[in-house]
Image (cartoon, rainbow, N blue to C red; front, side, top):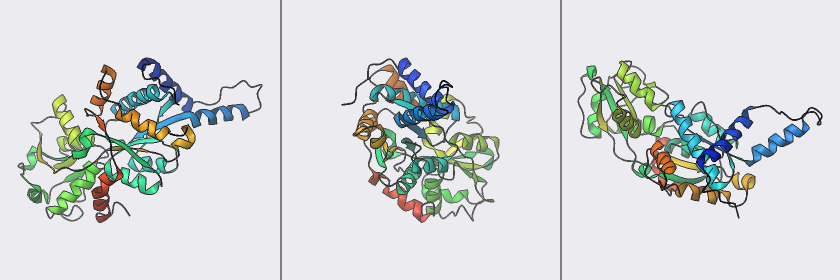
Length: 320
């Protein structure tokens, strides 16, 4: 039975996380009297085998993302009694690739990248989702100089033809896949009916910034980021406005590697799932962590929740 460390102060858990992160980036410091490289390599291999490696798609400001994921790492270290290493990734595709090669154990994916990761990695398990991910939405925003008025339904998106438009990441569910789908439902082909080729900002925050600056007239992004930024007052709403919020769909979720039980002990995947579900905001640290994810609770999730995402991804050629 795995030892519980639930009541460890997070400062201690965070120290363990920091040690894991530093160890992953430093060379061997073993005594030179040991066999050259042998002892250090063995120690490094043992340490790597014992660390839970977590990551997330880079969809928001990198410093905010790192702060959130390191806090999750500290929570999981305390809950599960293991070292946790946060591994930042350069882009969505890199996340899917590293998960497929076994270099990441637990990743917080969007709907599309989660489907891509599972299809590439046999045995990968959907572990949990935020409460908001059952009914997620995208937002279309526009620079006020574009002269666009808010629309009431998907059909109204037809007015976005001939605009300069940017998505987020090319693999983003809420910043590309579902906005493309809703544009298509309105009769707008992003590849042919816009003013030039659409842009791909790379993140939801940058989509806001590009539309606000006038680089693009219209953009689509994650509703959660839009609400968070406007509530924080970091969007000039005299310059950029919301013109449509989409119907709901399933989105973000945590996926676990099929190799975790072999590396970290039999039953570890089940314990990890339970640790995520136990994150209920019952103390200030947990409440702050849930707030960082924009959620009030973590709830169960299944692969079948994203069947529609897979279907749309195949239709649009983003899943083959």
